[in-house]
Length: 255
Image (cartoon, rainbow, N blue to C red; front, side):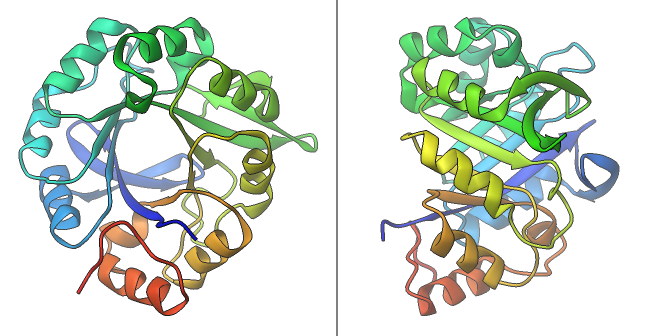
């Protein structure tokens, strides 16, 4: 089994890390700079930073905060939120990010995926997808999950890969923040459709078996989580130790 990645996520609003359940009822979860440093030092394989209200507030990602986070970590760093053109991406990469994540803007303008991939290379482009069950099928949602696009998840992931995305960050809105385990059904469905790396997000709890189950039952490349790491209900070193004991290797070994 190829080495997997464990990725903490910083959902940032007004300069603070927040977390909710099913994209609602956001609560303070810590200082993003302090959390980023902690994760970098404790063995995280990568870090994702999402300015979750940038799109709805029609503004750009907070570059100053990205710079501060970037200076305190030594792992690959993905940034998303409010990105709508090449100039936005240049500014974020200059601030210290290694990759960018686009979501709502990609749905509204799929050419943005192709343009970004052609300009910066596919390895730099992560397309984040928030999906939810509606009438027995999975549909893509945008604007922090508030708008159902009417686009079926299966159709969108095919389009995303075709247009040159290097990676997909898939979040199950149904599982988000519940800490009851990853949405294996949704993840497996996408896994069978695309050939690019897939990051699974939504539902991770303090039980390491949630991650073991994910990696055993699907072929995802990485697992992303937030609450359990922010509130120290499960540490990255403990998780990686449990994964190792189960025969699952990760990119960065933790002694």
